[in-house]
Image (cartoon, rainbow, N blue to C red; front, top):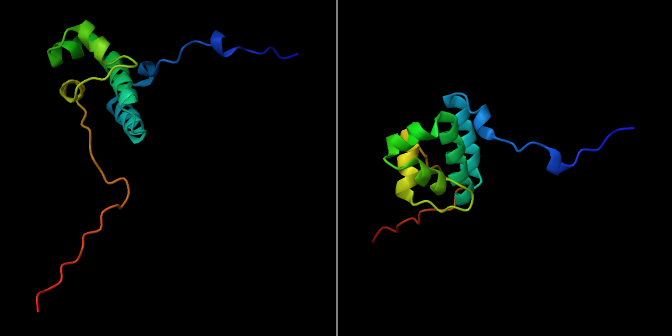
Length: 112
């Protein structure tokens, strides 16, 4: 007879354990950005900061370690300035690209 495991009995998943190099971090952050969820972005930056060393990232951003944890926890709404400073400390950039062609320039008619 197979034994069933309850979800509550499973260990909590910690993505920071798998963010071992720049490529993994870039891929993780790209997937998170594709979700278009600001709260998820804050949590993901926290995961990456944890993988890189929260104390070191706090020093690089000029924020207190406790303030950084608070800004990057679930439910937090960090200011863009904080996100920008954390990204710079992590050595990553947030890049914009068109999601879908939504803008079609109107053609100007030439005067006659």
